[in-house]
Image (cartoon, rainbow, N blue to C red; front, side):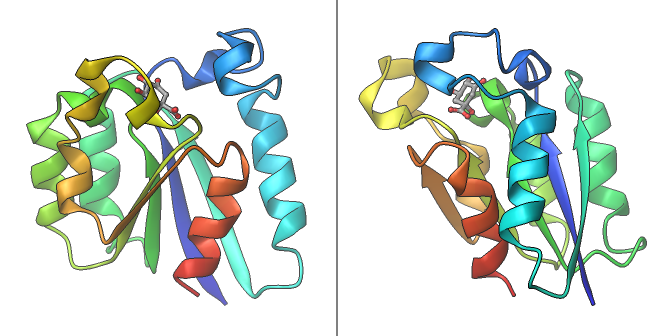
Length: 141
Ligand code: DQA
């Protein structure tokens, strides 16, 4: 049984009501349930976590190996575009990290073109909506 940590960054706790025309109508809990259903045939345990605080996400990344996670799927949200700290945390661990975005960040404001955390990840998915999560997990099984 593999164990994956699914990390979600700032404002993703507001999914469902936050700009649904961009992010869809599902809450983060609904996306978690959808992802688990999509992967029910797989031998994988998913542990979901959301924080609005950069340092809390950094700590989660640091502790992932000690907690026996095989991979991390991360939606760093706005920190994708600003956080050298999360970039460096991802670089400092050996387990693979896949970055996901619900929206296609390349079709949006120009400030979303800067993707700092993605430079430290093995792969990035952007624009596939909630399907990005289970597809990202599949990519590392
Ligand atoms: C996002 C895209 C980011 O630019 C934005 O700041 C988010 C969500 C996405 O999932 O599409 O909060 O990561």
